[in-house]
Image (cartoon, rainbow, N blue to C red; front, side, top):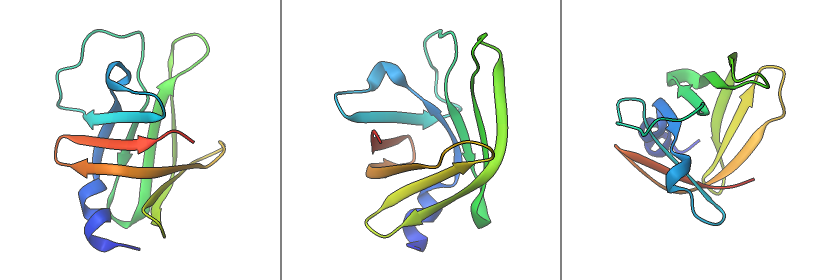
Length: 104
């Protein structure tokens, strides 16, 4: 695992769907000032690979799960929420205030 890249990813990321383009998804830190939305996908990436994931459910009620995450060769963010299919998201860029990945 790329330790430098992994350390940049640790944090609470929220989908900023207003900024998505074509095949790219944008995530911002939870402290970012987002416009109002009916719900957003969120994930907390913790040291050691623990994941807490939250997303709007079918009735717009927030649903949460615990799982794991890792950085795979080729700078692929792998998110494995408990009870759901794993996501493999190629990392386009990451810094303190923005994470950009390609859609799966």
